[in-house]
Length: 328
Ligand code: ASP
Image (cartoon, rainbow, N blue to C red; front, side, top):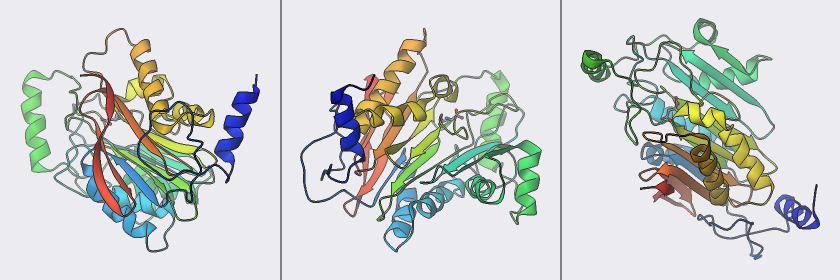
């Protein structure tokens, strides 16, 4: 039932009269009611250290008249094309059969979204996801179909398995034990959210997934509602970490709903993490991190274990922020 209190919260969130000045994380359960002169924009936030460099590219787009959708695509492409990054795109660690398989999705401010999963040999899956969104009536293409679509649309085939990643896989093969490692490059997706000068939100999420996964495994990252969700009336959220746990609680969609009902971005991320903890008997090795951004330019993040961080570009400054966490 919609109580008067909730109704006020919802109206406040959707109203231009509800304004706030700081974009920095606040743990309040309700949005700030202090009025000030401006919504913070533009803002871009992305997961992990690799987010810092990606934010630079996104910021350039946002501050030269570009829209949030172009910003998030340009931003995460930097990470995808970095051969030294072993958890996204080119140079990503392979699956147990030695194949680099990529997952990505993108979502804009008009509920427009596109995704690719289990895609091989294409360096920038985020741009293929955008093409799926813009050129087809579908949301997601996978595997050979996604690759054929990419090639038909001018993407070129590239060997994504670098020598460094191949060596790591060969070393892993000696024991062949699949084990997610907390805060390490055997995973670590880049998820990015942006609010542009027009006040519109977009998000992108791209990964090579859990290293040494079963061939054919797809995680949360290309799944709209799990790895990424954007509702331009409310806010946006994205995830990193053990994808199976994120899918089980519809992580990013839940965070947006919690923000719709009045929670701050950080409080919403914290509640989603608590749900993951509650739903899993054994959380050893189970790292998940969420970040969120609302319409007012406020941000937040939270993780199961200590060590998750995110890059935040706002007020003309790019900086790393350590997320709060459930467990040390
Ligand atoms: N969420 C990704 C997956 O499960 C991996 C990660 O972010 O660490 O494929």
